[in-house]
Length: 120
Image 1 (cartoon, rainbow, N blue to C red):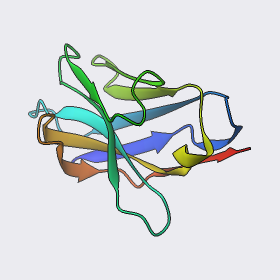
Image 2 (cartoon, rainbow, N blue to C red):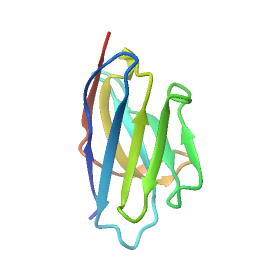
Image 3 (spheres, rainbow, N blue to C red):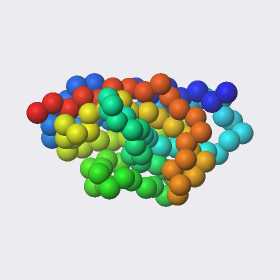
Image 4 (tube, helix red, strand yellow):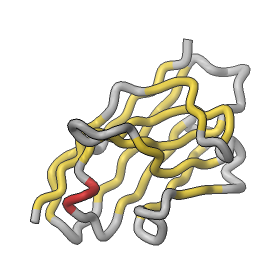
């Protein structure tokens, strides 16, 4: 019943910035954490960042720590991922997700993804 829709993907030069957004609907009685995962062609889907429902705690993968920032607007039911100092290795389809645990990084609902391409 949960629907997640990502936006903001596109082509950007290495060193540039991009901001992804995700709006959720259909989960009025859930207080799931929110987060982002990514998957490059032929690669396993990997965790990127997560934020608790209240926004009081965040966690990041080591590869993006210090460059990416996750935030959410509870009133608008959106979560965003500000990506700075982008590298070609960041190229992937980025998926918005709800999580049952930010500790185990376990997702239960997924968006359809948005493509981010970083060129050199």
